[in-house]
Length: 276
Image 1: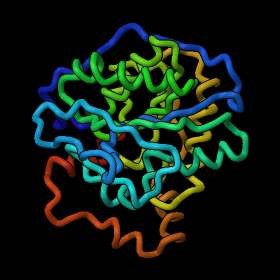
Image 2: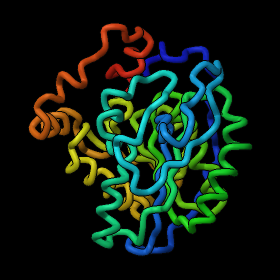
Image 3: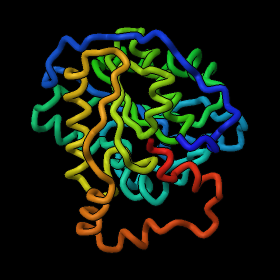
């Protein structure tokens, strides 16, 4: 990771790795998503408090069957409006999961999914207050597997910490993101590395083919990863997904053009150095 990003921050470094073996086969499992992208349903819940210097540690529930028009994003350090704001399946592929449920590739999608705003400097409240509330809901709906998508440097750390906490409570997890160095430090039980920009771990907006292939690979790696802490890198390349997206929606390039007032810090956070 670019050493200029949060150079003075005391990153979490773990040595142990919790592990919950998935005994069920994939067609038998119920799947929930959790993301650090700061998604919320704007008609039902408030946005995250971006003014909090340490990061808002609350969470939002996202119901199964949500539509793009009901979703908004409030993330502290990464502008996601030009990707997730166009197609939430980039980071939270509920539509793809619904297809897999119809095809009986999984047992079902959870009735409720979850979002946090992951750029949180001190994860204490997140782990001690927020995660137990999320865990209670996951247990209520009999969820077997939680797929956690990470956004932002601290969001990767907190995604890994959440995965560890859930795994300690007998839920099987897998984290997907782009920062290998953070995954190596925090040691979530299972990680998937994709070399895509923040907020687009499952592919470019409207590229349903790549989104589906990556989600399916995440689910397959729930069983194929056998070594606690293993990081499996997928072979997908961003340029291919973006070209496919442009063929589907030719005006995507203007819709996703960088804003003129993007901060230098944000540009650092999404530079190619971040994907090492």
